[in-house]
Amino acid sequence: MFTEMVGWAIDEGADMLIGETFYYAEESFKALEVMKKSKLPAVITIAPMAEDIMRDGYGIVETCKELEQRGAEIVGMNCFRGPVTMLPYLKEIRKQVKCHVAALPIPIRTNKKYTTWFNLPDRNDCGCGAPHGRTFPTALEPLMCNRYEIGQFAKDAYKMGINYLGVCCLGNPMLVREVAHAVGLTVPASKYREKMENHFMYGENIPKHMKEYGNKA
Image 1 (cartoon, rainbow, N blue to C red):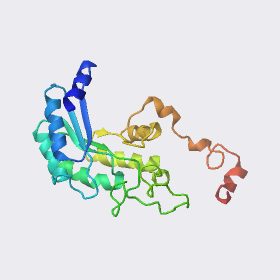
Image 2 (spheres, helix red, strand yellow; image 1 turned 90 degrees about the vertical axis):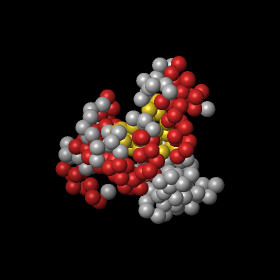
Image 3 (cartoon, rainbow, N blue to C red; image 1 turned 135 degrees about the vertical axis):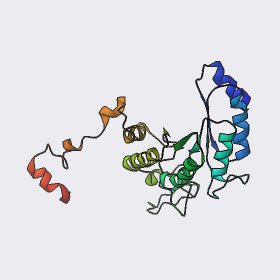
């Protein structure tokens, strides 16, 4: 399977190869083995589940260290975990490897009790729950991070020396724009960033009577 996919990428002139969302370490090792044969730079990101180990028993940091030793140019994490429960592992990975580190969380408010999105409850249940009995994967909207949370995550990761940054599943252009701004970049979408000074109730460029009314709204 990996040989076929890498072959397609090479045929289409890829500049680099990305393998992601591995929750079995041995599978990530095999993918990397095939990717390295291409002589293209290889990115491998893992997605451990709530047991906080890979499904085949490898540790999270251990897996990233092994991937680096096997030749990955970039290692790290993507998917399954939001900023709060991904960042602590990224901090340890950054300390343990010399290569570049990748960080692509889901924009979901996972927490210490529910470290992944698979069993995350909706504490403000509207009473019209998903027919399959859980928020994942189709009723996660009330649990999404806002743009400022994603921006803060990107700032924190960048300060650690993590330079491969993004947003995984449920990401959108606005959140990706926030990641770019967090590391000091201006991108084409920057012109769409909110200008709160023009807000009809909370801005500066508004009539006094509306500004005074703001907190009563």
